[in-house]
Amino acid sequence: MNTRMRRVAVAVAASAMAVSLAACGSAKESGDKASTSTVKGNAIKVGLLLPENQTARYEKFDKPLIEKAVADLTAGKGEVVYANAKQDATTQNSQVDTMITNKVNVLIIDAVDSKAIAGSVKKAKEAGIPVVAYDRLAEGPIDAYTSFDNEEVGKVQGKALLEALGDKAKSGQIVMMNGSVTDPNAKLFKSGAHSVLDGKVNIGKEYDTVEWKPENANTNMAAALSALGKDKVIGVYSANDGMAGGIITALKAAGVSPLPPVTGQDAELAGVQRIVAGEQFMSVYKPYAPEAQAAAKMAVALAKGDPIATTATAKVDSPTTKGVPSLLIPVVSLTKDNVKDTVIRDNVYTADEICTDKYAAACATLGLK
Image (cartoon, rainbow, N blue to C red):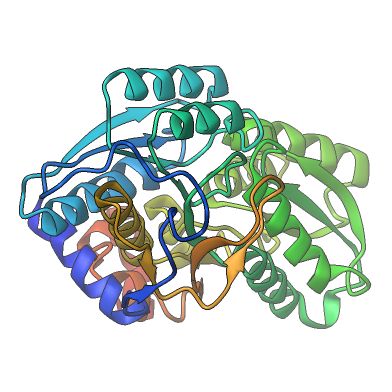
């Protein structure tokens, strides 16, 4: 764990929200079968399953933040066993089987496919291994859930796009580039965005982008420009930064100038740099530290058979499990006007990391160096 990542864990958590503890009830109290993997002391083995490595956040932030949180909560005696499914649901199911065989005490799962993982969650439960659904609401008998307010993410994106369009909102057409249909969060982002945009803009084309891949977003955007006409597209709703990069490449390749406003999510470094340069209008900054810390606290408590402790103000219903104790973290709209007060202030990136030679002039204009 490097020094900067430690600063991320401390500073982002402090600035975003305090993850205090309030008992929500153990599995035994809620009537579920108590975990047979319950351990005494801090020698806890946490299985961490993340969905893919296309998005920079998982390897750069989530994994090291969870590892550090588990270490802090267990006085350095806890172990995180990690696997990344690389966007393959079948692989992730096999990884759960391996975790069960290796007798982890608890699982944190960010599902590739929320439905496809349900059988594996059931297997873990039958083996006495509690499951924390992380970032995406997995189906099956999960014990706890932490994520961001994902419908609010879509609303934030939609509001930002309307702000960027101003009086031009109905003068042309927008393209909506949603995420993968296998990701339950994508459905919530989409719903939130539509709740803001419907009736206020003309949606010329809309896509559910396979596997969230930038190259698929690029292909979709090129098709939209061909169908609608490059001069008719006044804005693009992109559900995340990776796809925004593919979209902007397609717009440039088609000779679209000036670029229309494009949204994003995740505050990836490349996305922040595009925002600084004026190529991407906004991203959604999601403070990963409080989410990771909440997941670690839930996991350690479940492994010990203790009550699940969160700041949850409500319980979330999944399609298969009602009343899941949950913590939803608020998000921030990131534009060129608040780069300094978000990702730089919280030590996610330094000004030097953002302001490479290519972006030095733009950074100077914004007072970032």
